[in-house]
Image 1 (tube, one colour):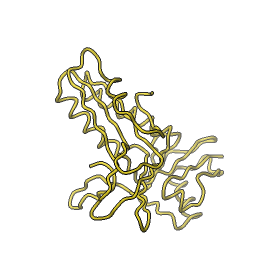
Image 2 (cartoon, rainbow over the protein chains, first blue to last red):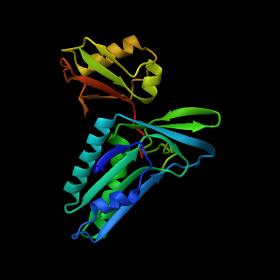
Image 3 (cartoon, rainbow over the protein chains, first blue to last red):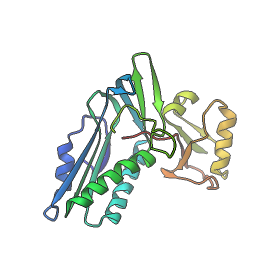
Image 4 (cartoon, chains in turn purple, cyan):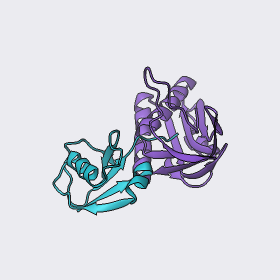
Length: 152
Length: 77
């Protein structure tokens, strides 16, 4: 495995937790984002993710460097899966270790927010009666979040 | 010659995943105008361009051999 990678096979989150664990770390946060079946009353059958793979891995690594700069002493590892994913499967895993737990929690949440704004990965929802490429899902002022089928 | 990549909904709307074009010496902004002229139906408003896998500015100049990727709003996670 690479510390920051795009994968096509099912994700084993333990690999990424093991990668960040080290003697100085008193805390590991492990976030897994999963394919959700129901979003605002619409049933998703499955999701298809596509990525610009070399740039996606580069930007994941950049996010890791940002985290290590903002929360010194943390170590991170991130993987995102592409291709067709069934309901409940893991789309993304973020593992962060730090000497104390607060940094690991904060840095982990920072990573998912940055992924949603920066990393060239796209999600297509497949429903019973159609499909749609999902655009920007980040929360904006005065506009309800365009929530959709994966984590959160 | 530069190589242009299309992803996700843009790939489906353009009908091709990539193509080559003689846009050496032109800016990223001019690249978007060229694409908008060739594919008037492409939604380019919120599109960012990455040159050689780095987000680029409209005034950045393209060089021979560059790869320019059109990045529609991302939805990872």
